[in-house]
Image (cartoon, rainbow, N blue to C red; front, side, top):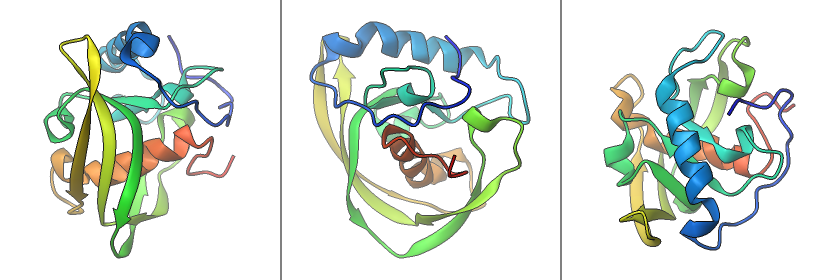
Length: 161
């Protein structure tokens, strides 16, 4: 598995069930855990399926630093249902590993609904509220992570390319 260059910018298809993505989800998790990235960043908080597939599905995987906040390493069909005040956040993107970070408009607090695998058999629904605290540890930037990965699922990226 590798990150597509250039990024395809194709809108991801909604996931219907765990069996549909199970194999690719585990491969994407192994890819993220391997940390074999070139460029400015050697570690990623998350990788979207849209970054590695010409036929993207709406899911992303997260690393060990933040998976407890999500309740899983795999986040499926994530959507924002409530937003708070806007803020800016300095972030980079694994699809553009040789570009400088960019200031991006985000929401400091969001409520999301999504699905996660349960017992590696099926998906269960979740609802979470994430609030960012810039300058804190990795666990406090989950709202930024969600918004970044949703952009990829929508076929967009922070650089507008």
